[in-house]
Picture 1 (tube, rainbow, N blue to C red):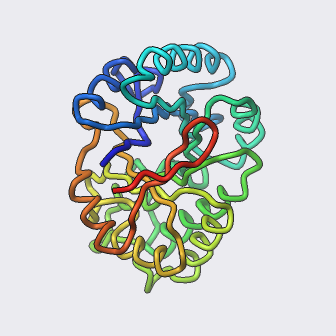
Picture 2 (cartoon, rainbow, N blue to C red; picture 1 turned 135 degrees about the vertical axis):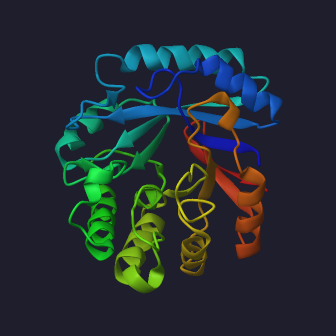
Length: 266
């Protein structure tokens, strides 16, 4: 693979790595593109937050300096991961109103005020209820008033769900998945192949089954994302993911460079 389009540095509440160390690791792995996409989970009940209006300038300035420093070795994409919630729509819109961040990953972590990471989120919910609510939140996030480039870790809820079969299957949620994919394709957004799947029943999020559905519907814009919070996880499981995507029929990644989407051949 040539690109890792979802990584986190110490600018994220759950990150510890200097941005420079993520970049250096990507170069050693032979990548030509890395997007640093630190968290902006605004107005959440647990105050996770990350990048907000008070430190967005420092964050962008830091990454722009590194972008210039490493321009002859790797493309450093100044990104941000927006954790969608209905109440934070306008704040997120203000956060991404300028030229930078140049790449925005739109993700859903919180559903009805609760993070799907927590076991408590699933209390008194069966799979149909929990997953239905999650997919509803994903669909709602696609109508957000702020700009975004990619849809992050679709299937995030699988990682922590207590159900015997934790996979989101098309058979169970065909209407919602079809609607989500149709909207992603219509908006020209990128679907992320996220390899941070600890606890999930799939090798990537979304699963191979859902990538096949997306491809059959005409979706071609995809990218690879480790969701790394540690430098050792940059490019994690990319060889396996590339093989899966190529088997389906995908031929290239879509990344953001210099304000434009660009295709990178496998």
